[in-house]
Image 1 (cartoon, one colour):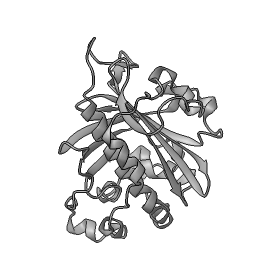
Image 2 (cartoon, helix red, strand yellow):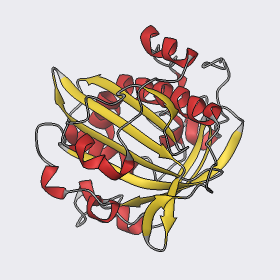
Image 3 (cartoon, one colour):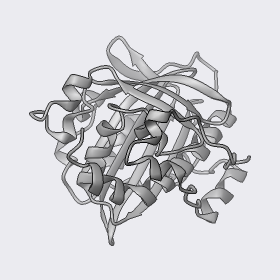
Image 4 (cartoon, one colour):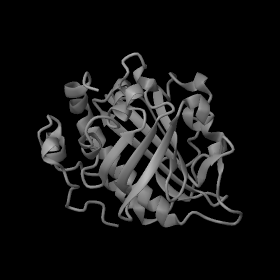
Amino acid sequence: MKLFLGKKVGVSKEEKALSYYKFFERDMANIPAEKIALLDAPQEKSAVPFEEKNLYLAGKDKDYAQVGYGTAANGTGFVCNETYMPGVTPEMLDWWFPWHSVGSDLRYKIWDPEDHYFARADKADYVCDPNVPVNEKTWGVNHYILEDVGGGPGFLKICFKSPADFGFDTSLIGKDYCASLVCGIGDGSCAAAMVHKWYPYQDGVMLCSRFWIGYGMVDGEIRCTLPEGAKVPVEVSKGLFAHNIKEFTNLAAILPEVYAENKDNF
């Protein structure tokens, strides 16, 4: 699988005039070799089951896969990743996820200049409201996205949820293994539940991602949506893992500087 295409998405004249266009022009950060090696085969261990996701939030899921992709016993796919981000603080990530969904499409493009086209919040007034705490600016907001996760550009809607609405034990937030998080349901060619949590680690933060592919909203609850006996193709999980290690490695490289220059500019 070729991770770097050598060709970036298009940008407009107006985007080139923005102060953060310089991050788009930079070469993307190199992915650690040990993560690229994991693309060769699915993990033997599965991710923590969605129904036991509070173990992940509490940092008590070490018996399960931490980095990689594969297929769970019920046929759903999973993707796990851990990204060490030197120089990043929890507050920077609280800010990043809403910030890139409003304003110029360039904000999403600098995250992964080869694969990201746009991410647009459906409630920009809420996201930009200074009275909304920054860690709540994704709650109840849908992001309409165009990106390429390996099969060519495709549209995706991510319906972000509050941790409580996602089914998390909120008493676990603000503890050693979860300073903060974002979570939501991806509604695209294959529904998926998604969480990114982070906590202070060494000289920055550790960001831990989990995707449970084949989970979506059913009668107001997050459940497995696969027909009985069906399986998520392993190539779907592999493609998402490849995209995840690419985009978050690059975000780790640019976020401290992006935040320092734009934190007061929603």
